[in-house]
Image (cartoon, rainbow, N blue to C red; front, side, top):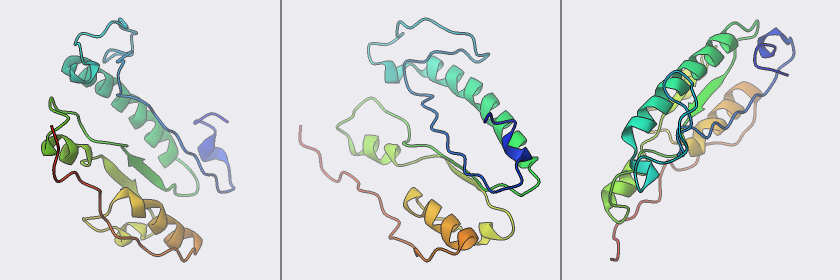
Length: 154
């Protein structure tokens, strides 16, 4: 089933997509054209222009997908989450690890589900909220915490 067919189904569907972008290698420019596979930086994670172009292209694709899903007869539940935050130059610094936990975490929860969200929610509770509220599961919430590096040995 392609994404354009999802909103046409009367039964409940669960759609999961893991989009690897914007991880290196950055394969697309901001218009979706394929770019060179040769990294611009020795460390491909530090290619800021490649990252920005990939994000701009990806944003266009995600907007089309969300717009398609929003035209469902049954109001969709949509969660957009990143798997990690940005990289910085020193992977041995606490700032590196703290930045890794700053992620995109956006929800579209119709019919009052958004009232179950709270400012400190982390991904550990995203699906627990959805499953409890919409599907009658009784999972409850876990502690919203992240393992953070407090000291680093060099």
